[in-house]
Length: 185
Image (cartoon, rainbow, N blue to C red):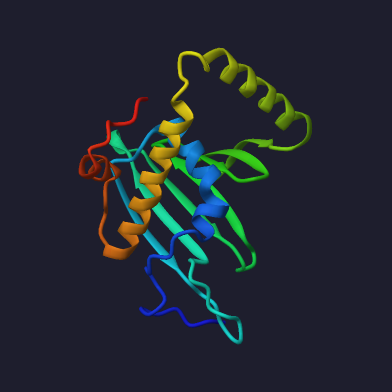
């Protein structure tokens, strides 16, 4: 088991697990909830034994806080069995967990109330409805994919910055510093 210490925690290593394994989850998060007010994160490179060290992170965990007390946690790993990518939304009464395989609705105690697989006919039906929705709104919202990518990029940079500084950071500050117009809801 590799040792986890200051030398391999919170190093900014873009283009690792977070971007490749977690981008879709971050995009879903931005589409559903917009950008958070603050982000606290930790990333790490945990190669052990004779494995060569990568210049990218192997694991990333971020706590995102939203206005009015909402929060979400995203955790992404690769090459560290069991590999995973999951996003968990929290409210005062429920929790929604999204993975590549399913969506789970649970109460705050963790008791599952509903579980929907994201495969087979269910996924095909959802994708068909999504394509129809996109086609219907494409003319009015032609810039939405670019704006969403910019928002996800800002969120990624904020996660990396928060991991490096060890303090909560805000994506709004990046928009302000770059003089970008704020994302539309």
